[in-house]
Image (cartoon, rainbow, N blue to C red; front, side, top):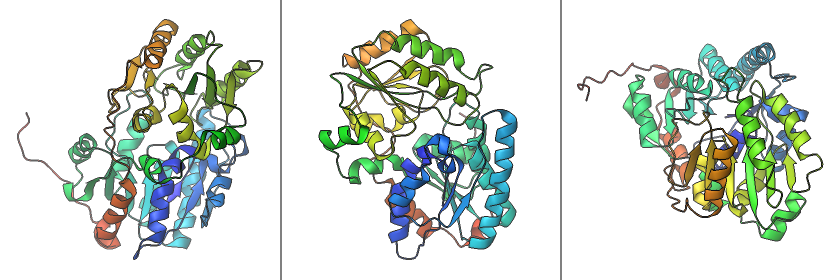
Length: 379
């Protein structure tokens, strides 16, 4: 199994525990990406603190977020993962999501002849280059562990055999049913400051299909947040996509001198408890669509990045304009998005992932993948 950053580790930690404990399975762990980068909080330390043994570390030298740096980093991920897979000789490489480095890991597995099991294929996000990466990983994968039925149908339409596609739900929800609940006192001690009377959890990532990388959308968000001096803003930094560094510098400037702003590189295990304690999630992170409904927190989803992704009724989509964002925040905090049905599962995804891995064909049979052609007439 591989993890490359705070976001996927938060989703993978419970499958990792269950795989390590399952009869007939053993866990080997490869860590790469922002986990190993001090400017992103060196989150590998959280993995070690959780008791996992790291079998391979693949540094990517993420010294910037310009295309040339990311291309070089992808090359390091590719070559380092090939070397790790040749040494570890796993039967399957389990990957999650649609990061650019995850594609490099899938390519490495292809070159070495290791089958890939992929969590999260078949989703749609029209506002990020993750869209193409996700579908490319699907075609490089041999076992598909998708989060909902619509995603399963898309994976099959890409030519993947239906018997290789399993609807398992979102593994990030497992923490909500299995992790110990943090009391308010413990949460505030972990965060280093008390919760406010009203609280927003804010995360905004680059919008990589836009020419400006989503900078105008980001500035519109800051413009909407600036007047909210009576609301505590819990902000997490952007990811390593192009433009993320500039956004993080702007976040640091925004937080400087504002007593109502708490800015974090990463929140780790405090993220979901904080989400549950907030009045709304604001920004363009997928966690607002996938996890927030299960903690009964409404989401204000801004702009283009998550367009096309399945969302429940507690998600309020809005244009990336200060007035529209302010209006949506007001609606969310007034309780206008109080139907918290979550289309991403029931918090038992890890068990389904383990079952699918145990029932999977042997390595050699997994590698022999037929192209499935649905002969049914189009609707």
